[in-house]
Structure formats: structure tokens, C-alpha cells
Image (cartoon, rainbow, N blue to C red; front, top):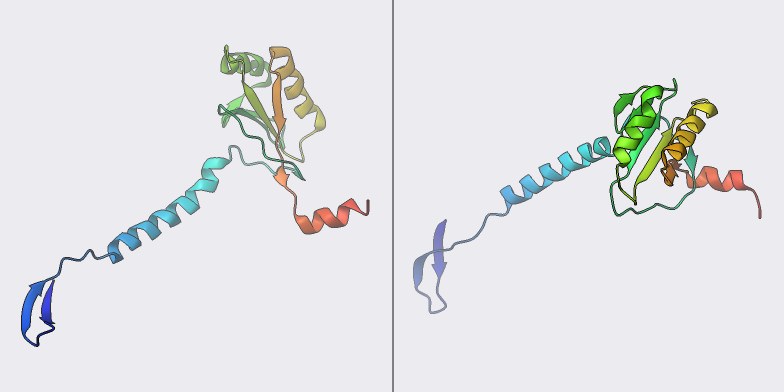
Length: 151
């Protein structure tokens, strides 16, 4: 890119100015931002279930926990892979291996029968998994304040 510049003494000279054009860079960054905004919620959840909404603090782990999902129909999924109830014990043992800090998230659809989630919890306990966490969706603040009543 070149253009005519006037010197302070009044003479004019032709000089090349090297300048980075930021417009294509900004365009690429915005496109990447949109792509990540669309794909990140898809990568977060496993099997599509409707979780109950409750107030809880987030838990941080050193290792990535396994996720056991129980669907509305009572089907079990271990990290998005369908598992038969009779094979669940072996799959959990294999997944836990010799890890001492193994965590298992249990995601139960709010419409699932209580016995299906309890079966999964009892089975995890029998296998020897000591670190369990039940997942829920964050409750809406307007709904939570009206449902709690006065202290």
C-alpha cells in the first residue's frame, strides 16, 4: 500500500507504509467464536435427558469423572454408550480400574422411576465406587425464591 505523504518542510515524497490489515483477522476470530459458542453446549452434555433443577455448588475434580445417565425409559448410558443393566457392574469395574480418585456422575432424568436411579447408585457402591455425584440443572432464581418461603 503506498500513498503520497507531505513532509513538514513542504516537499512531498512517495513512501511505502507497511501496516497490518486487521479486518481479516477480526473476521476469522469472530467466526471461530461463533463456532465455539454453538458447539460447546453440544460437547458438554451426554445423553439428552431432562435434569431436575436444584441449587448446588459446582464440584471441581482432578480427573475427568465418568457419567452414568438414566433416561426416562430406564435405559442406562455410560459416557453416551448404551449399557444393559446386567452389564453395568462389569463396565463400572472396568472404567474404575485401579484409580483411587475415581468419580462417577449420575444423571437421572426427572421423570425416571426412583428405583432405576437407586439401582445405579447401589450397583456403583457394590463395585466399590466411593465418590458419587448426582447432577442437576441450576434452579431459576425467580422460581427458587418463591418456592422456598420465608426463613
